[in-house]
Image 1 (tube, rainbow, N blue to C red):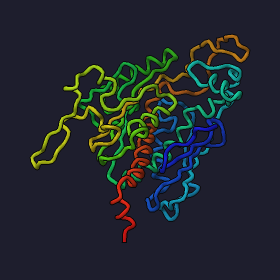
Image 2: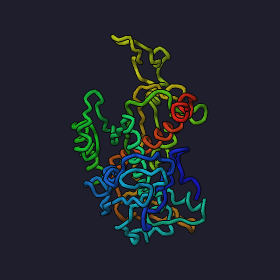
Image 3: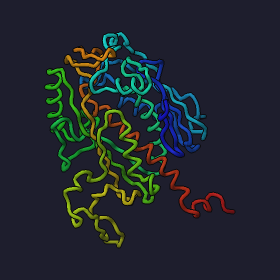
Image 4: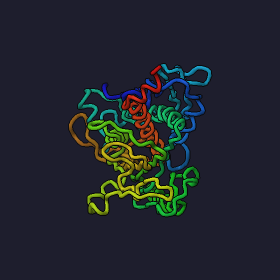
Length: 367
């Protein structure tokens, strides 16, 4: 299977299946000297971990990470970093009744048509459990960004019809909310809506927003490796994402140039700044120093407990119910995945940008 690598300099390759021995990632191109231990990575994996509350799958996994290489005496060595999370609570028997059926909304049919073979146990490589490797690698990228004072924060902004009020967001509420919303009132309404979905043996979709602050201007490689293009690719590669927006996103189609343009102003010290940020911190595919805003729309969890019409390998339709343990909503656990893919993209572009000016090379190597 091709397509399991991401990045140019800060490059990762994820591996593993939902019901295999484990999930992992190899990171190549990480600079030496970054302080790193398993606790730095585990705190991000814990946010993705199943079984956190009633709105996540009951699969009991510690998702404990092991650093196998690339770190010595608490610092990265510059060599490939290999990370492993072992699977512990697989219940492959739950999928026996659909071993010859293609589930609606899943990648079963597409995988079989491509490879002539599929792992029906939880979707194999197409399972959301694949994102463990992304989150683990993203935690390492986050350590690099923190060295430069860059912060990345993702949160849930919508669940079904319930949306947060951006005018009174409180980021301190994210970890307190079972659905990771920075708005207490919206969090309560979203929980009530989820209860309604669960009673109906159904699921729902949602939106994750990510904001990156203190990004230096100048990140991005025109023409085909624009920062926003690579962010869109990174986040669109997350299995359940169906749309990605940067800045105002689709709303720009409804505005005039006089409304959408980010005009410049000067502060009391004469320093220039953008009076608005409709562009989401990226102009011409290059960061402009403003906060970067990314928005990802996730589809509802396709595994629901209602009987559904499934296509069989025999070519006929069968009504069957998906068994097993599944999330009624994806976004609560997926926010950290969006965060990770954003961090990985920025880390890669930071290293690429280091070679874009000769004075950068002179500072490092000129005598």
